[in-house]
Amino acid sequence: MAKIILSLVFLLSSLSAELINIYPSQKILDSKIPIVDIRTPGEWKETGILKDAITIMFYNEKGGYDIESFLNELNSKVDTKKQFAIICRTGSRTSVVGAFLSQKLHYNVINLKGGVVFVKAKNLPMVPYK
Image (cartoon, rainbow, N blue to C red; front, side):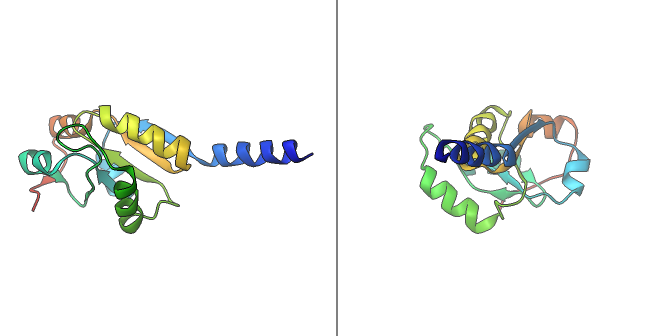
């Protein structure tokens, strides 16, 4: 009986978490879903950021990361009980981070495929990083 209950709890928790992979659009920007830009400060300065994006670096310039620090900052700036989006330069880093956040932490994450490269190609609103 305990195994059945444990299995149901696991199943329900895995059903509540979701990773959606979509391309950035004006519609997603208009939805006011929080967007977390996980690139580095150098990248933010180079290209700017999406208007209203929340900047929280995941991987540093050398490819290292501090999950605990990232999660502390994420949870202080974003209501992770609700759906939020993540973006990087091309969508490569966010595909890894999004899968981790969804599968391991059961967050409802939108991975913005194509990243900032796609955003710039579609002329979506970017602002300088301060």
